[in-house]
Image (cartoon, rainbow, N blue to C red; front, side, top):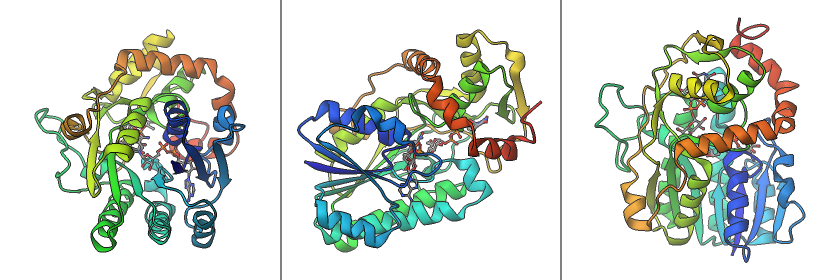
Length: 342
Ligand code: NAD
Ligand code: DAU
């Protein structure tokens, strides 16, 4: 099978490539990534020389280039990870989110239709469902929970999901969608909560917690997300949405404290800063469907996954120190104040 993976130089896409090449060495992976600030070619170094792995630097909005690529490679399956993925950046400047996340998706699906792709898989997010109240722990996101987005990021992802379902109904494109909760693990860009707190704590820098830190996210180890997507593209039913999550809800403040404890850093590094605009309160996935229909269950418990993740960031300082130098510094100062937080 030839799988075209977009956004494979980013966090989840790269982990998916490693997972696929390990689980299915008979398959070929063609990775397409435009290498935005979030994409890192060095991440893919371990697989770069492999015969069944190829990398192409290309923007998914480039219609002509993408069609040419399909003409030359005829992929069987497309898995679309490529996206602008950071909520705070979407609040600052939504435009690129609409372009990549919506237009880029339509370009990939047009090419998939034109070249008879057997499965187009859209990697979506639980954020399309909006949020749940903190005082209703009995509520969960189900596949039929109405889309009700909060940020420009989640709105762009929900728009893409609607377009994917429209291509299924109108053109019969064989699609599937996965909506996963918050991922953590190796190679996550240090603008996201867990790697940001690890990197700042290691450098003895303040730890910026939005508002009171009571918001809840449902954390899943990245490899378990990859396993779910692998199952969906091979066994999932066309036209179906699958929620992915491991029932691991935690308040942000508890995550930050846990990281401090693991690194032996004092809680007085924690700073409660201005809250995110429109901040979603709680995410919580009901994964019953993917469990019952495809037999998916997460393998990694949070206590183990977070240890592995912290150890990975300790062992791969070069990877993230390189990333947080240069351009990222400007973003950090813009978001968290001149010279950082005090
Ligand atoms: P990421 O920001 O780490 O990586 C995104 C990748 O896409 C980067 O390599 C970037 O260079 C590439 N890219 C961006 N714009 C592109 C374009 N126009 N053309 C080609 N490549 C482009 O993101 P991530 O956290 O790995 O998320 C991957 C996907 O999973 C996204 O679609 C996201 O919405 C979804 N998702 C993420 C999470 C999470 O917790 N991170 C959870 C659920 C779903
Ligand atoms: O739920 C899936 C989504 O998870 C994905 O679709 C997104 O691509 C991914 O970025 C993630 O979105 P979140 O907004 O939940 O993740 P983030 O790591 O940005 O923030 C997690 C929580 O931590 C959130 O409540 C905001 C808070 N936070 C975040 C940052 C960066 C802070 O308190 N301080 C921070 O500095």
